[in-house]
Image (cartoon, rainbow, N blue to C red; front, side, top):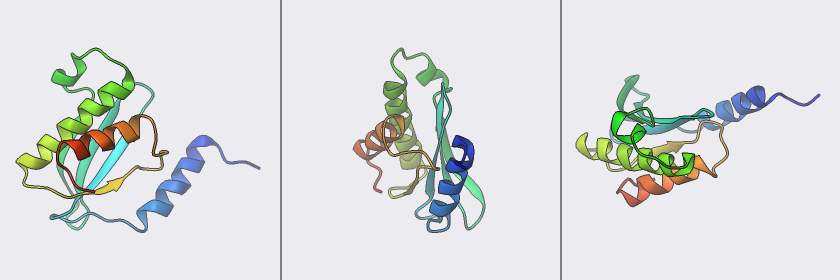
Length: 118
């Protein structure tokens, strides 16, 4: 019997997370995507702390008009600025079980263009 979408994503997420982990120098950049919004966090897994976050719900991003992919690119640019203020230049990308295409890819590409290395 086939897995549901949620169960399939959970299995992929666990398979990816057993191989990657974030540190204070190179945090994990975790993406969450819902039907309407997208958010991203910089996580230090060693100390269990969130070092920075950005979301499409932030006022300066929510005021922008555009498609969901364009908004995801703005969130990627925003998280790169947050990382730069925190002194972070390199991250480990955690797509969180989502396919690396569409909004997730737009976010990652915008973060790379804004200066994050991963």
